[in-house]
Amino acid sequence: MFEKINGKVVKVDVGMAGGVVARSGAMLFYSGDISFAPHQIPGAQGMGGGGLMGMAGRMMAGEHERTMLAQGNGQVHYGFAGLEVHVVQMQPGASLRVEASRLLANTAGLQSSIVSVASSGGGGGGLMGALRGAASGALTGQGMFTTQLSGHGAAVLLAHGGFLELQVGGPNPVVVDPQAFVAAYGNVQTELKTALSWRDAVGRGSGEAMQLHCVGQGVVYVQASEEKL
Image 1 (cartoon, rainbow, N blue to C red):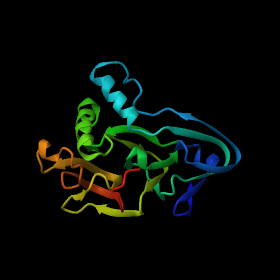
Image 2 (image 1 turned 90 degrees about the vertical axis):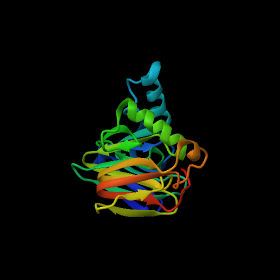
Image 3 (image 1 turned 30 degrees about the vertical axis):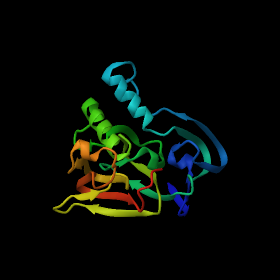
């Protein structure tokens, strides 16, 4: 579906892909009869209004990039800010959890939802997951929510300085600096943990203060940098 032209650009046949959702500003050029329209952020619908649910909905919307839906027949080339790209081919039964700022594009047929990064893949969603994510995001400088994709299709990731693919599945968890985390693919559960008190951790935002523990079976993608996108 997505084909890498070089380390920083991908192209896709939109008709064969059944439509493509990409972050706003990622389209470089296209050929053919293609239309583009704003794409509604999934997962944040129905969470407006006041109270805690409204706050969670606003936080979700704020943590996700604006996206555009491309439809029609032709080829589109995508890239963003000269960042490295990596294509993930999705398999049925597996899910991809990726930071919104590190998702370049995905085929439109994938199912998309928003989960808390504080405990994703292990029942950490909902309002309490949102509030835990808010606290964790404040400490790490990382987004409070992550996008979860599932189904048959493909997605394109973004990273500073290239990608590291870490296999998850041994007896010990893979522990990642949250600011270097890009995505987790497969049956991988992620949980933010700290060895420091809240008071000690505030203002540090480093991997020493907050760590992302990854367990299960799959792959964790890490960028070779702590720079935010």
